[in-house]
Image 1: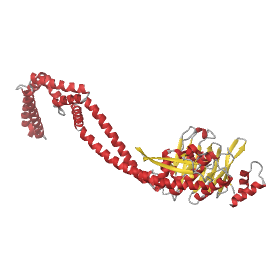
Image 2 (image 1 turned 180 degrees about the vertical axis):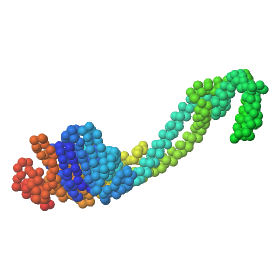
Image 3 (image 1 turned 135 degrees about the vertical axis):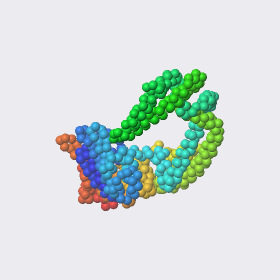
Length: 551
Protein backbone atom coordinates (compact mmCIF):
# COMPACT_ATOMS: atom_id res chain seq x y z
CA UNK A 1 0.00 0.00 0.00
CA UNK A 2 0.99 3.63 -0.44
CA UNK A 3 2.41 4.85 2.87
CA UNK A 4 3.40 8.42 2.07
CA UNK A 5 4.05 10.84 -0.74
CA UNK A 6 6.65 13.60 -0.70
CA UNK A 7 6.46 16.36 -3.32
CA UNK A 8 8.85 19.28 -3.77
CA UNK A 9 8.77 22.06 -6.37
CA UNK A 10 5.95 20.61 -8.46
CA UNK A 11 3.20 22.81 -10.00
CA UNK A 12 1.67 24.76 -7.07
CA UNK A 13 3.49 22.71 -4.44
CA UNK A 14 6.57 24.04 -2.65
CA UNK A 15 7.08 21.21 -0.21
CA UNK A 16 4.48 18.69 0.84
CA UNK A 17 4.42 15.34 2.61
CA UNK A 18 1.27 13.24 2.89
CA UNK A 19 0.83 10.10 4.99
CA UNK A 20 -1.72 7.52 3.84
CA UNK A 21 -3.48 4.80 5.81
CA UNK A 22 -5.22 1.50 5.10
CA UNK A 23 -8.89 1.12 4.14
CA UNK A 24 -10.72 4.04 2.51
CA UNK A 25 -9.13 7.49 2.40
CA UNK A 26 -11.13 10.37 0.88
CA UNK A 27 -9.57 13.54 -0.51
CA UNK A 28 -11.75 16.61 -0.89
CA UNK A 29 -11.19 20.27 -1.66
CA UNK A 30 -12.52 23.12 -3.71
CA UNK A 31 -12.18 23.08 -7.48
CA UNK A 32 -8.71 24.30 -8.44
CA UNK A 33 -7.24 23.66 -5.00
CA UNK A 34 -4.82 21.09 -6.43
CA UNK A 35 -6.36 17.62 -6.06
CA UNK A 36 -5.39 16.72 -9.61
CA UNK A 37 -1.88 18.07 -8.96
CA UNK A 38 -1.36 15.39 -6.31
CA UNK A 39 -2.34 12.70 -8.80
CA UNK A 40 -0.03 14.24 -11.40
CA UNK A 41 2.86 14.11 -8.96
CA UNK A 42 2.16 10.48 -8.04
CA UNK A 43 1.82 9.54 -11.73
CA UNK A 44 5.19 11.19 -12.40
CA UNK A 45 6.74 9.06 -9.66
CA UNK A 46 5.24 6.00 -11.32
CA UNK A 47 6.85 6.71 -14.69
CA UNK A 48 4.78 9.18 -16.74
CA UNK A 49 6.62 11.54 -19.06
CA UNK A 50 8.24 14.54 -17.43
CA UNK A 51 7.46 18.13 -18.44
CA UNK A 52 9.54 21.19 -17.51
CA UNK A 53 6.35 23.23 -17.16
CA UNK A 54 5.55 21.32 -13.97
CA UNK A 55 8.50 22.90 -12.10
CA UNK A 56 7.22 25.58 -9.74
CA UNK A 57 10.65 27.21 -9.48
CA UNK A 58 12.37 26.80 -12.84
CA UNK A 59 15.80 27.13 -11.19
CA UNK A 60 15.32 24.20 -8.81
CA UNK A 61 14.81 20.53 -9.39
CA UNK A 62 11.54 18.77 -8.75
CA UNK A 63 11.58 15.79 -6.37
CA UNK A 64 8.75 13.30 -5.91
CA UNK A 65 9.13 10.36 -3.58
CA UNK A 66 6.55 7.65 -2.85
CA UNK A 67 6.95 5.01 -0.15
CA UNK A 68 5.08 1.70 -0.44
CA UNK A 69 4.64 -1.15 2.03
CA UNK A 70 5.01 -4.22 -0.21
CA UNK A 71 5.55 -7.07 2.25
CA UNK A 72 2.32 -8.81 1.07
CA UNK A 73 2.81 -8.19 -2.66
CA UNK A 74 5.08 -11.15 -3.52
CA UNK A 75 7.38 -8.98 -5.62
CA UNK A 76 10.69 -10.60 -4.66
CA UNK A 77 11.02 -12.27 -8.07
CA UNK A 78 10.41 -8.98 -9.89
CA UNK A 79 13.18 -7.27 -7.89
CA UNK A 80 15.52 -10.19 -8.54
CA UNK A 81 14.85 -10.18 -12.30
CA UNK A 82 15.39 -6.42 -12.48
CA UNK A 83 18.55 -6.64 -10.32
CA UNK A 84 17.08 -4.35 -7.65
CA UNK A 85 17.43 -4.39 -3.86
CA UNK A 86 14.24 -5.73 -2.31
CA UNK A 87 12.86 -3.98 0.75
CA UNK A 88 9.39 -4.40 2.26
CA UNK A 89 9.36 -0.61 2.55
CA UNK A 90 10.14 0.35 -1.03
CA UNK A 91 10.88 3.94 -2.03
CA UNK A 92 10.32 5.21 -5.56
CA UNK A 93 11.99 8.53 -6.34
CA UNK A 94 11.78 10.75 -9.41
CA UNK A 95 13.78 13.90 -10.04
CA UNK A 96 13.39 16.51 -12.81
CA UNK A 97 16.27 18.97 -13.16
CA UNK A 98 15.89 22.57 -14.40
CA UNK A 99 17.52 21.45 -17.66
CA UNK A 100 14.80 18.87 -18.18
CA UNK A 101 16.86 15.81 -17.28
CA UNK A 102 14.85 13.06 -15.62
CA UNK A 103 16.25 10.57 -13.14
CA UNK A 104 14.45 7.70 -11.43
CA UNK A 105 15.38 5.46 -8.50
CA UNK A 106 13.96 2.38 -6.80
CA UNK A 107 15.41 1.95 -3.32
CA UNK A 108 18.27 4.31 -4.31
CA UNK A 109 19.16 2.24 -7.40
CA UNK A 110 18.96 4.18 -10.70
CA UNK A 111 16.37 2.71 -13.06
CA UNK A 112 14.86 3.54 -16.45
CA UNK A 113 11.23 4.57 -16.96
CA UNK A 114 10.22 1.13 -18.23
CA UNK A 115 11.36 -0.44 -14.96
CA UNK A 116 9.59 2.30 -13.02
CA UNK A 117 6.34 1.76 -14.91
CA UNK A 118 6.57 -2.01 -14.54
CA UNK A 119 6.85 -1.72 -10.77
CA UNK A 120 4.21 1.03 -10.58
CA UNK A 121 1.65 -1.20 -12.34
CA UNK A 122 2.18 -3.79 -9.62
CA UNK A 123 1.74 -1.29 -6.79
CA UNK A 124 -1.19 0.96 -7.59
CA UNK A 125 -4.02 1.51 -10.08
CA UNK A 126 -5.00 5.13 -10.77
CA UNK A 127 -8.45 5.56 -12.28
CA UNK A 128 -9.04 9.01 -13.73
CA UNK A 129 -12.25 10.22 -15.35
CA UNK A 130 -11.05 9.77 -18.93
CA UNK A 131 -10.43 6.08 -18.23
CA UNK A 132 -14.18 5.51 -18.46
CA UNK A 133 -13.57 5.50 -22.20
CA UNK A 134 -11.63 2.25 -21.72
CA UNK A 135 -15.04 0.59 -21.61
CA UNK A 136 -15.05 0.76 -25.40
CA UNK A 137 -11.46 -0.37 -25.98
CA UNK A 138 -10.96 -3.95 -27.13
CA UNK A 139 -7.78 -4.59 -25.10
CA UNK A 140 -9.44 -3.48 -21.85
CA UNK A 141 -12.56 -5.49 -22.59
CA UNK A 142 -10.66 -8.70 -23.36
CA UNK A 143 -8.34 -8.28 -20.34
CA UNK A 144 -11.34 -7.77 -18.08
CA UNK A 145 -13.21 -10.84 -19.33
CA UNK A 146 -10.07 -13.02 -19.41
CA UNK A 147 -9.13 -12.04 -15.87
CA UNK A 148 -12.53 -13.13 -14.57
CA UNK A 149 -12.56 -16.23 -16.78
CA UNK A 150 -9.18 -17.26 -15.36
CA UNK A 151 -7.69 -17.82 -18.82
CA UNK A 152 -4.69 -15.48 -18.70
CA UNK A 153 -2.26 -18.42 -18.69
CA UNK A 154 -4.18 -20.03 -21.55
CA UNK A 155 -3.94 -16.74 -23.45
CA UNK A 156 -0.17 -16.67 -22.94
CA UNK A 157 0.03 -20.18 -24.46
CA UNK A 158 -2.16 -19.06 -27.35
CA UNK A 159 -0.06 -15.91 -27.84
CA UNK A 160 3.13 -17.98 -28.19
CA UNK A 161 1.40 -20.25 -30.70
CA UNK A 162 0.08 -17.24 -32.60
CA UNK A 163 3.57 -15.73 -32.79
CA UNK A 164 4.95 -19.09 -34.00
CA UNK A 165 2.22 -19.11 -36.67
CA UNK A 166 3.10 -15.57 -37.73
CA UNK A 167 6.80 -16.39 -37.90
CA UNK A 168 6.19 -19.52 -40.00
CA UNK A 169 3.92 -17.58 -42.34
CA UNK A 170 6.59 -14.92 -42.69
CA UNK A 171 9.23 -17.58 -43.30
CA UNK A 172 7.13 -19.10 -46.11
CA UNK A 173 6.68 -15.72 -47.77
CA UNK A 174 10.39 -15.01 -47.49
CA UNK A 175 11.22 -18.43 -48.95
CA UNK A 176 8.87 -17.80 -51.89
CA UNK A 177 10.30 -14.34 -52.49
CA UNK A 178 13.85 -15.66 -52.32
CA UNK A 179 13.01 -18.49 -54.70
CA UNK A 180 11.40 -16.09 -57.19
CA UNK A 181 14.46 -13.88 -57.04
CA UNK A 182 16.84 -16.82 -57.39
CA UNK A 183 14.87 -18.34 -60.27
CA UNK A 184 15.23 -15.10 -62.19
CA UNK A 185 18.96 -15.26 -61.58
CA UNK A 186 19.35 -19.03 -61.80
CA UNK A 187 21.08 -18.96 -65.22
CA UNK A 188 23.42 -16.25 -64.00
CA UNK A 189 24.14 -18.12 -60.75
CA UNK A 190 24.70 -21.36 -62.67
CA UNK A 191 27.14 -19.65 -65.06
CA UNK A 192 29.07 -17.98 -62.26
CA UNK A 193 29.29 -21.20 -60.29
CA UNK A 194 30.41 -23.17 -63.36
CA UNK A 195 33.11 -20.61 -64.13
CA UNK A 196 34.52 -20.78 -60.59
CA UNK A 197 34.19 -24.56 -60.52
CA UNK A 198 36.11 -24.88 -63.82
CA UNK A 199 38.86 -22.63 -62.43
CA UNK A 200 39.67 -25.34 -59.83
CA UNK A 201 41.01 -22.80 -57.38
CA UNK A 202 43.09 -23.97 -54.43
CA UNK A 203 43.81 -22.13 -51.18
CA UNK A 204 47.27 -20.52 -51.19
CA UNK A 205 47.71 -21.14 -54.94
CA UNK A 206 48.07 -17.49 -55.88
CA UNK A 207 50.88 -16.84 -53.41
CA UNK A 208 52.79 -19.91 -54.63
CA UNK A 209 52.38 -18.89 -58.29
CA UNK A 210 53.54 -15.35 -57.57
CA UNK A 211 56.68 -16.71 -55.90
CA UNK A 212 57.42 -18.97 -58.89
CA UNK A 213 56.74 -16.11 -61.30
CA UNK A 214 59.18 -13.91 -59.43
CA UNK A 215 61.93 -16.56 -59.62
CA UNK A 216 61.44 -17.39 -63.29
CA UNK A 217 61.25 -13.74 -64.31
CA UNK A 218 64.58 -13.04 -62.62
CA UNK A 219 66.32 -16.40 -63.27
CA UNK A 220 69.29 -14.95 -65.23
CA UNK A 221 70.14 -12.41 -62.52
CA UNK A 222 69.69 -15.04 -59.79
CA UNK A 223 71.95 -17.57 -61.56
CA UNK A 224 74.59 -14.92 -62.31
CA UNK A 225 74.84 -13.78 -58.70
CA UNK A 226 74.80 -17.33 -57.30
CA UNK A 227 77.66 -18.33 -59.59
CA UNK A 228 79.58 -15.20 -58.61
CA UNK A 229 79.27 -16.15 -54.96
CA UNK A 230 80.28 -19.76 -55.66
CA UNK A 231 83.34 -18.63 -57.60
CA UNK A 232 84.50 -16.39 -54.76
CA UNK A 233 84.14 -19.30 -52.36
CA UNK A 234 85.44 -22.24 -54.43
CA UNK A 235 88.20 -20.98 -56.79
CA UNK A 236 91.62 -22.56 -56.20
CA UNK A 237 93.61 -19.36 -55.87
CA UNK A 238 92.48 -17.02 -53.14
CA UNK A 239 89.06 -18.65 -52.79
CA UNK A 240 87.38 -18.30 -49.40
CA UNK A 241 87.40 -22.06 -48.73
CA UNK A 242 90.99 -22.44 -49.93
CA UNK A 243 92.16 -19.56 -47.74
CA UNK A 244 90.30 -20.98 -44.70
CA UNK A 245 91.95 -24.37 -45.33
CA UNK A 246 95.40 -22.75 -45.27
CA UNK A 247 94.49 -20.81 -42.10
CA UNK A 248 93.36 -24.02 -40.45
CA UNK A 249 96.68 -25.75 -41.28
CA UNK A 250 98.69 -22.79 -39.97
CA UNK A 251 96.89 -22.70 -36.67
CA UNK A 252 97.18 -26.48 -36.32
CA UNK A 253 100.99 -26.13 -36.37
CA UNK A 254 101.10 -23.71 -33.46
CA UNK A 255 97.99 -24.80 -31.52
CA UNK A 256 100.03 -26.59 -28.84
CA UNK A 257 102.26 -23.58 -28.15
CA UNK A 258 99.71 -21.39 -26.36
CA UNK A 259 96.58 -21.63 -24.27
CA UNK A 260 93.32 -22.33 -26.19
CA UNK A 261 95.17 -22.99 -29.39
CA UNK A 262 93.10 -26.13 -30.11
CA UNK A 263 89.91 -24.11 -29.62
CA UNK A 264 90.99 -21.57 -32.23
CA UNK A 265 91.79 -24.36 -34.66
CA UNK A 266 88.37 -25.93 -34.01
CA UNK A 267 86.54 -22.66 -34.61
CA UNK A 268 88.33 -22.11 -37.96
CA UNK A 269 87.57 -25.71 -38.92
CA UNK A 270 83.91 -25.27 -38.01
CA UNK A 271 83.65 -22.06 -40.06
CA UNK A 272 85.23 -23.78 -43.07
CA UNK A 273 82.80 -26.69 -42.82
CA UNK A 274 79.77 -24.32 -42.53
CA UNK A 275 80.91 -22.37 -45.58
CA UNK A 276 81.54 -25.58 -47.49
CA UNK A 277 77.97 -26.73 -46.66
CA UNK A 278 76.63 -23.32 -47.72
CA UNK A 279 78.53 -23.56 -50.98
CA UNK A 280 76.92 -26.92 -51.72
CA UNK A 281 73.43 -25.43 -51.09
CA UNK A 282 74.21 -22.52 -53.37
CA UNK A 283 75.52 -24.92 -55.99
CA UNK A 284 72.26 -26.90 -55.86
CA UNK A 285 70.14 -23.74 -56.14
CA UNK A 286 72.24 -22.48 -59.05
CA UNK A 287 71.75 -25.79 -60.86
CA UNK A 288 68.00 -25.66 -60.27
CA UNK A 289 67.63 -22.13 -61.58
CA UNK A 290 66.72 -22.58 -65.18
CA UNK A 291 64.88 -20.18 -67.39
CA UNK A 292 61.75 -21.94 -68.68
CA UNK A 293 59.70 -19.59 -70.89
CA UNK A 294 56.84 -22.08 -71.33
CA UNK A 295 56.46 -22.54 -67.55
CA UNK A 296 56.58 -18.77 -67.05
CA UNK A 297 53.90 -18.36 -69.68
CA UNK A 298 51.72 -20.97 -67.96
CA UNK A 299 52.12 -19.22 -64.59
CA UNK A 300 51.34 -15.81 -66.11
CA UNK A 301 48.18 -17.14 -67.73
CA UNK A 302 47.03 -18.79 -64.49
CA UNK A 303 47.67 -15.64 -62.48
CA UNK A 304 45.84 -13.54 -65.06
CA UNK A 305 42.88 -15.90 -64.74
CA UNK A 306 42.91 -15.54 -60.95
CA UNK A 307 43.32 -11.75 -61.09
CA UNK A 308 40.45 -11.49 -63.58
CA UNK A 309 38.14 -13.54 -61.36
CA UNK A 310 39.07 -11.46 -58.31
CA UNK A 311 38.39 -8.22 -60.15
CA UNK A 312 35.16 -9.51 -61.68
CA UNK A 313 33.74 -10.63 -58.35
CA UNK A 314 35.37 -7.83 -56.33
CA UNK A 315 37.29 -10.23 -54.12
CA UNK A 316 40.80 -9.95 -52.74
CA UNK A 317 41.89 -13.57 -52.53
CA UNK A 318 41.34 -17.08 -53.81
CA UNK A 319 39.87 -17.98 -50.43
CA UNK A 320 37.14 -15.36 -50.92
CA UNK A 321 36.44 -16.70 -54.42
CA UNK A 322 36.13 -20.24 -53.05
CA UNK A 323 33.68 -18.96 -50.40
CA UNK A 324 31.66 -17.24 -53.14
CA UNK A 325 31.55 -20.47 -55.12
CA UNK A 326 30.18 -22.16 -52.00
CA UNK A 327 27.44 -19.53 -51.73
CA UNK A 328 26.49 -20.02 -55.40
CA UNK A 329 26.33 -23.77 -54.75
CA UNK A 330 24.02 -23.18 -51.78
CA UNK A 331 21.78 -20.91 -53.87
CA UNK A 332 21.53 -23.59 -56.55
CA UNK A 333 20.77 -26.23 -53.90
CA UNK A 334 18.08 -23.94 -52.43
CA UNK A 335 16.44 -23.55 -55.82
CA UNK A 336 16.53 -27.30 -56.31
CA UNK A 337 15.14 -28.03 -52.80
CA UNK A 338 12.55 -25.21 -52.79
CA UNK A 339 9.49 -27.42 -53.19
CA UNK A 340 10.67 -29.77 -50.47
CA UNK A 341 11.46 -26.92 -48.05
CA UNK A 342 8.16 -25.18 -48.83
CA UNK A 343 6.17 -28.34 -48.20
CA UNK A 344 7.94 -28.84 -44.87
CA UNK A 345 7.12 -25.29 -43.75
CA UNK A 346 3.50 -25.62 -44.89
CA UNK A 347 3.11 -28.83 -42.87
CA UNK A 348 4.52 -27.06 -39.79
CA UNK A 349 2.21 -24.12 -40.40
CA UNK A 350 -0.79 -26.42 -40.68
CA UNK A 351 0.05 -28.11 -37.37
CA UNK A 352 0.53 -24.79 -35.58
CA UNK A 353 -2.68 -23.39 -37.10
CA UNK A 354 -4.58 -26.43 -35.86
CA UNK A 355 -3.24 -25.93 -32.35
CA UNK A 356 -3.89 -22.17 -32.52
CA UNK A 357 -7.47 -22.80 -33.64
CA UNK A 358 -8.07 -25.19 -30.74
CA UNK A 359 -6.72 -22.69 -28.23
CA UNK A 360 -8.74 -19.83 -29.77
CA UNK A 361 -11.93 -21.93 -29.62
CA UNK A 362 -11.27 -22.74 -25.98
CA UNK A 363 -10.65 -19.07 -25.18
CA UNK A 364 -13.83 -18.04 -26.98
CA UNK A 365 -15.88 -20.67 -25.18
CA UNK A 366 -14.63 -19.57 -21.73
CA UNK A 367 -15.14 -15.90 -22.63
CA UNK A 368 -18.74 -16.49 -23.68
CA UNK A 369 -19.48 -18.39 -20.50
CA UNK A 370 -17.90 -15.73 -18.28
CA UNK A 371 -19.41 -12.85 -20.30
CA UNK A 372 -22.90 -14.07 -19.48
CA UNK A 373 -22.10 -14.28 -15.76
CA UNK A 374 -20.53 -10.80 -15.74
CA UNK A 375 -23.43 -9.30 -17.67
CA UNK A 376 -25.93 -10.57 -15.12
CA UNK A 377 -23.80 -9.45 -12.17
CA UNK A 378 -23.21 -5.92 -13.51
CA UNK A 379 -26.88 -5.50 -14.46
CA UNK A 380 -27.93 -6.52 -10.95
CA UNK A 381 -25.48 -4.10 -9.33
CA UNK A 382 -26.65 -1.29 -11.62
CA UNK A 383 -30.11 -1.74 -10.13
CA UNK A 384 -28.59 -1.07 -6.70
CA UNK A 385 -27.04 2.11 -8.13
CA UNK A 386 -30.36 3.58 -9.26
CA UNK A 387 -30.66 2.09 -12.74
CA UNK A 388 -33.31 -0.62 -12.29
CA UNK A 389 -34.27 -0.78 -15.96
CA UNK A 390 -30.73 -0.78 -17.30
CA UNK A 391 -29.11 -3.73 -19.03
CA UNK A 392 -25.37 -4.34 -19.30
CA UNK A 393 -24.30 -6.93 -21.82
CA UNK A 394 -20.95 -8.33 -22.90
CA UNK A 395 -21.23 -9.63 -26.44
CA UNK A 396 -18.63 -12.21 -27.52
CA UNK A 397 -18.43 -13.25 -31.18
CA UNK A 398 -15.86 -15.36 -32.98
CA UNK A 399 -14.15 -13.74 -35.97
CA UNK A 400 -12.60 -15.31 -39.05
CA UNK A 401 -9.24 -13.67 -38.56
CA UNK A 402 -6.84 -14.59 -35.76
CA UNK A 403 -5.20 -11.88 -33.67
CA UNK A 404 -2.82 -11.77 -30.72
CA UNK A 405 -5.65 -12.54 -28.24
CA UNK A 406 -7.52 -15.19 -30.24
CA UNK A 407 -10.51 -14.85 -32.56
CA UNK A 408 -12.92 -13.20 -30.15
CA UNK A 409 -14.45 -9.80 -30.59
CA UNK A 410 -15.81 -8.40 -27.34
CA UNK A 411 -18.22 -5.48 -27.14
CA UNK A 412 -19.56 -3.90 -23.95
CA UNK A 413 -23.19 -2.94 -24.57
CA UNK A 414 -25.66 -0.96 -22.50
CA UNK A 415 -29.30 0.06 -22.50
CA UNK A 416 -31.22 2.25 -20.06
CA UNK A 417 -34.42 0.33 -20.84
CA UNK A 418 -34.84 -3.43 -20.89
CA UNK A 419 -37.18 -3.05 -23.86
CA UNK A 420 -34.45 -1.40 -25.94
CA UNK A 421 -31.66 -3.32 -27.65
CA UNK A 422 -28.29 -2.62 -25.97
CA UNK A 423 -25.72 -0.62 -27.97
CA UNK A 424 -22.03 0.12 -27.47
CA UNK A 425 -21.74 1.47 -23.96
CA UNK A 426 -19.82 4.68 -24.68
CA UNK A 427 -22.34 5.65 -27.38
CA UNK A 428 -25.45 5.53 -25.18
CA UNK A 429 -24.34 5.91 -21.55
CA UNK A 430 -24.10 9.32 -19.89
CA UNK A 431 -21.08 10.40 -17.85
CA UNK A 432 -22.76 9.39 -14.61
CA UNK A 433 -23.80 6.03 -16.02
CA UNK A 434 -20.28 5.37 -17.27
CA UNK A 435 -18.92 6.20 -13.82
CA UNK A 436 -21.26 3.70 -12.17
CA UNK A 437 -20.48 0.97 -14.70
CA UNK A 438 -16.73 1.50 -14.33
CA UNK A 439 -16.94 1.49 -10.53
CA UNK A 440 -18.70 -1.89 -10.62
CA UNK A 441 -16.09 -3.26 -13.05
CA UNK A 442 -13.23 -1.95 -10.91
CA UNK A 443 -14.81 -3.51 -7.83
CA UNK A 444 -15.10 -6.86 -9.63
CA UNK A 445 -11.51 -6.63 -10.86
CA UNK A 446 -10.23 -5.67 -7.43
CA UNK A 447 -11.66 -8.85 -5.93
CA UNK A 448 -10.35 -11.04 -8.73
CA UNK A 449 -6.86 -9.54 -9.11
CA UNK A 450 -6.33 -8.54 -5.47
CA UNK A 451 -5.07 -5.10 -6.45
CA UNK A 452 -2.91 -3.65 -3.65
CA UNK A 453 -4.03 -0.01 -3.95
CA UNK A 454 -6.63 1.77 -6.06
CA UNK A 455 -7.12 5.51 -6.55
CA UNK A 456 -10.42 6.90 -7.88
CA UNK A 457 -10.23 10.39 -9.32
CA UNK A 458 -13.83 11.66 -9.14
CA UNK A 459 -15.30 8.42 -10.44
CA UNK A 460 -18.52 9.77 -8.90
CA UNK A 461 -18.76 12.44 -11.60
CA UNK A 462 -22.34 12.86 -12.82
CA UNK A 463 -24.04 11.31 -9.80
CA UNK A 464 -25.39 12.64 -6.53
CA UNK A 465 -27.67 11.93 -3.60
CA UNK A 466 -28.63 8.36 -2.86
CA UNK A 467 -26.63 7.00 -5.81
CA UNK A 468 -23.47 8.66 -4.52
CA UNK A 469 -24.17 7.08 -1.14
CA UNK A 470 -24.39 3.62 -2.73
CA UNK A 471 -21.22 4.19 -4.73
CA UNK A 472 -19.53 5.14 -1.48
CA UNK A 473 -20.71 1.88 0.06
CA UNK A 474 -19.12 -0.05 -2.81
CA UNK A 475 -15.81 1.75 -2.24
CA UNK A 476 -16.07 1.13 1.48
CA UNK A 477 -16.64 -2.56 0.90
CA UNK A 478 -13.67 -2.71 -1.46
CA UNK A 479 -11.54 -1.01 1.20
CA UNK A 480 -12.05 -3.98 3.54
CA UNK A 481 -9.52 -5.93 1.47
CA UNK A 482 -7.39 -3.21 -0.13
CA UNK A 483 -6.31 0.41 0.11
CA UNK A 484 -8.76 2.77 -1.60
CA UNK A 485 -8.08 6.47 -2.11
CA UNK A 486 -11.01 8.43 -3.52
CA UNK A 487 -10.80 12.01 -4.73
CA UNK A 488 -14.37 13.22 -4.53
CA UNK A 489 -16.55 16.32 -4.56
CA UNK A 490 -19.55 14.54 -3.02
CA UNK A 491 -20.17 14.62 0.74
CA UNK A 492 -22.04 11.31 0.57
CA UNK A 493 -18.82 9.57 -0.50
CA UNK A 494 -16.53 11.70 1.65
CA UNK A 495 -18.49 10.58 4.72
CA UNK A 496 -17.60 6.94 3.98
CA UNK A 497 -13.89 7.46 4.46
CA UNK A 498 -11.96 6.03 7.36
CA UNK A 499 -9.51 8.87 6.79
CA UNK A 500 -10.21 12.31 5.36
CA UNK A 501 -7.73 14.70 3.70
CA UNK A 502 -8.55 18.21 2.52
CA UNK A 503 -6.60 19.96 -0.24
CA UNK A 504 -6.60 23.75 -0.14
CA UNK A 505 -4.75 26.74 -1.51
CA UNK A 506 -2.68 28.90 0.76
CA UNK A 507 -2.25 32.46 -0.50
CA UNK A 508 1.00 34.21 0.40
CA UNK A 509 2.89 37.22 -0.87
CA UNK A 510 4.97 35.00 -3.20
CA UNK A 511 1.82 33.44 -4.63
CA UNK A 512 -0.59 30.57 -3.99
CA UNK A 513 0.60 27.11 -2.96
CA UNK A 514 -1.24 23.82 -2.61
CA UNK A 515 -1.48 22.42 0.92
CA UNK A 516 -3.14 19.35 2.43
CA UNK A 517 -4.26 18.49 5.95
CA UNK A 518 -5.71 15.52 7.78
CA UNK A 519 -9.20 16.12 9.14
CA UNK A 520 -9.88 14.89 12.65
CA UNK A 521 -13.18 13.23 13.50
CA UNK A 522 -14.27 16.32 15.39
CA UNK A 523 -13.71 18.54 12.33
CA UNK A 524 -15.33 16.27 9.76
CA UNK A 525 -18.83 17.51 10.48
CA UNK A 526 -17.80 21.08 9.62
CA UNK A 527 -15.98 19.99 6.43
CA UNK A 528 -18.92 17.90 5.22
CA UNK A 529 -21.36 20.69 6.09
CA UNK A 530 -19.35 23.10 3.95
CA UNK A 531 -19.52 20.59 1.07
CA UNK A 532 -23.31 20.44 1.54
CA UNK A 533 -23.74 24.22 1.65
CA UNK A 534 -23.69 26.61 -1.25
CA UNK A 535 -22.67 29.52 0.95
CA UNK A 536 -22.72 29.98 4.72
CA UNK A 537 -22.78 26.71 6.65
CA UNK A 538 -26.35 26.27 7.85
CA UNK A 539 -27.71 24.34 10.80
CA UNK A 540 -29.45 22.02 8.36
CA UNK A 541 -26.16 21.31 6.62
CA UNK A 542 -24.51 20.50 9.94
CA UNK A 543 -27.37 18.19 10.86
CA UNK A 544 -27.14 16.53 7.44
CA UNK A 545 -23.39 16.10 7.82
CA UNK A 546 -23.85 14.45 11.22
CA UNK A 547 -26.42 12.11 9.72
CA UNK A 548 -24.07 11.17 6.88
CA UNK A 549 -21.31 10.35 9.37
CA UNK A 550 -23.58 8.39 11.65
CA UNK A 551 -24.78 6.31 8.73
